Image 1 (spheres, rainbow, N blue to C red):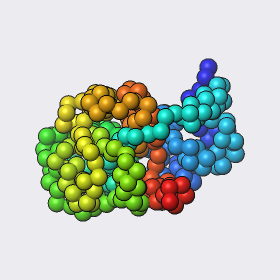
Image 2 (image 1 turned 90 degrees about the vertical axis):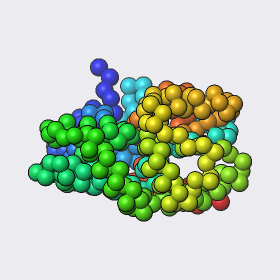
Image 3 (image 1 turned 60 degrees about the horizontal axis):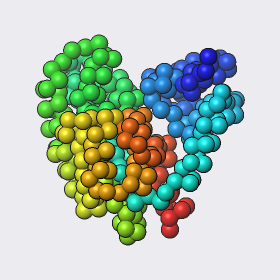
Image 4 (image 1 turned 45 degrees about the horizontal axis):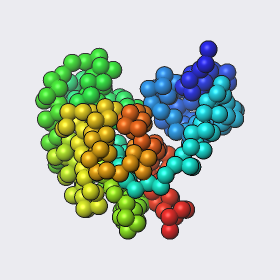
Length: 289
């Protein structure tokens, strides 16, 4: 039977006698994250797979056998032949803005305000392993993993208060402004399409001074069509009249990947934290200047 990439990671780890904890220590991530990698709950970037390949003594191609390697090659060739992009659509959290640690701590503060016995650090670890969800779904998932009950509406209300009072902690990754400036100078259309609520979304953009770069800012959660439901992205494509092949979506999670695929456009999924929080700066330095 054909194995998934996560299952191949698990098999390779077991072959060299590593526990999930030992692999997580080598990767400098949580044991929960390794478990989610192996279950396929969290997507593995090429950079992360390269790290794992070195640790387990496998070539990178090991993870793309049984036809996946050919499919990956074909996909790359198709991408190289794709049309030039005129519309750039971005996720916000962990794509343009560094909010993972702050958002995890906010959720932990909110939950422990109702359930003082809850493990603050464990909540942060679980949050770190779950990406792309709307805030309400994050709370539901984390509470389920902890096996505790709490008033979701009160948690969300307190979460909103904490975020509004600490909006300065939501800072741009290095190179974001330079990248946005360059794209606008070259006549590209820029959009944000995210699950974050519009009130907090606008505050984050205003604090960081980047609202004016975007032609439209869309909250999928507020619209009632949370990612990966493609409604908001498909609606954007239909309204502005640029062909889908000239769109590209940038995100950081499997939810973002599914979102773009469901809307029928190309996408790039990456991990800012594996690139020392400066992926856009690296791209500008290497390719765009």
